[in-house]
Image (cartoon, rainbow, N blue to C red; front, side, top):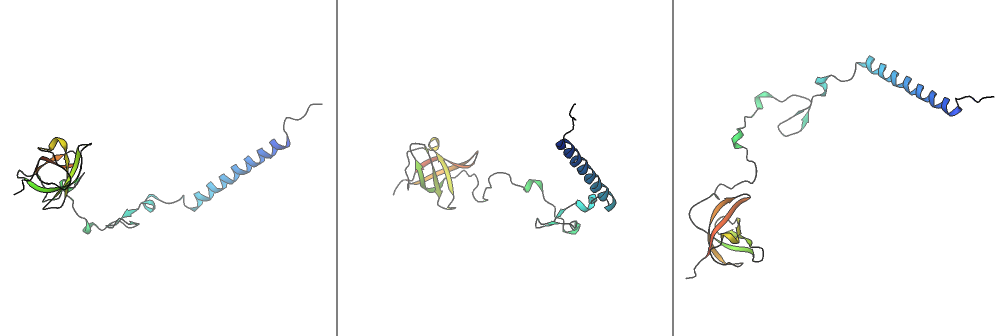
Length: 152
């Protein structure tokens, strides 16, 4: 006598699958009857002038025009620290002889300016008073034509 191909486990699995399908179909029908979910307008979110998310659209009278040329990308330049032809004066705050670079702290603006050994006129060390000119580099201002201040 041959055994049945369907075992108790197989029958139970089929019953569970069928029950899940029926439950899923019932949930689908309930969603359809409830209104089909939110509309597109209900899902839109707005941001106010402070960056907070709100459900109300922004007030068009508070709209502010921004000029695209005023947007600065990259490192910001201070207005008084621009490229100039005349020599500046400062003190070497750091210089690494083995690596060939350092920084000069400007006497007037108190900003640090990068200096490379290629921009030196004569050898410098830390705490030396120097004169230099600036030029724009790929990462900001660089000191060039760096020379020691002659002591009086």
